[in-house]
Image 1 (tube, one colour):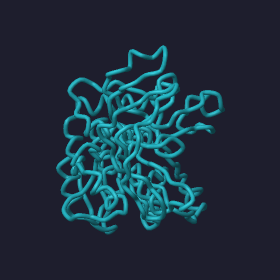
Image 2 (tube, rainbow, N blue to C red; image 1 turned 45 degrees about the vertical axis):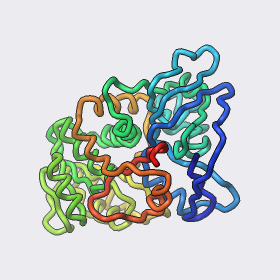
Image 3 (cartoon, helix red, strand yellow; image 1 turned 90 degrees about the vertical axis):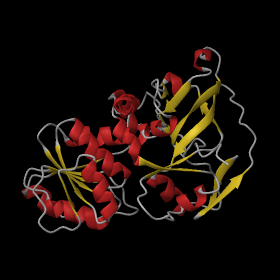
Image 4 (cartoon, rainbow, N blue to C red; image 1 turned 60 degrees about the horizontal axis):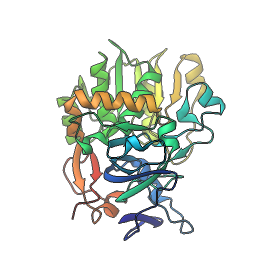
Length: 328
């Protein structure tokens, strides 16, 4: 069984044969997290190409290619961006920016399915990880988004005693708050939703704000939501010499006042995905920091998945929804 995107806002649950591994791996999917980028793919889908999305995958290897049989039977997590190793970004160690990348849930059929076939290069390029002993398979799906947060925090220079304003307290924003505390930074949150502010307060935020009034000056602003107004607020509020991380992508371009960046010496940068090394670091964090598990608020079935992918909310605090493909 799999969830197939067949058109804009249209997802069909279909019976599907088990993929043949070929010269690759066959994974029995145990869990797959739902990401905002999955919702954007569903919203902008074409009727010309059907596809299976989902890239926050954990599972068990049930078949392995020749020479890599030791993986069979292992519980694994998957860093979804499989790089070429040859292009300029790869040679510089920035494999998340690979010019020839193949990503599970994009160029490779994804994890909203009971079985997933991935190429042997996933092991050869370091994208397959054995799950730490005792780490819950549903919590382990957070490794992919957390690895992106690790990347973003590194790029922004989040470190001890630096103040960080996290704009948007969805699952990514909550992880930025928690990670900031782990490294000794002082995180604040700007978020209109009261339940999300309360969650952030209980998980490390120094203070939370519902509006832009009376915000503290912070060294680093991280936009952890897809909102043009959040971009505007961050660029207007970041103090001289500060850092703005455009972490949450927008569906279209956004006009930026370059003079503000120039004369205030702001550092403005993006964050795109993560490397396998950062994925491994995220797994280590999840294995020792149990509070991250509370970000998983809903385990859902195939029946519920289409509504979740269309962004329909069920009420209450909803952070990370994770598909159990074997749930009736």
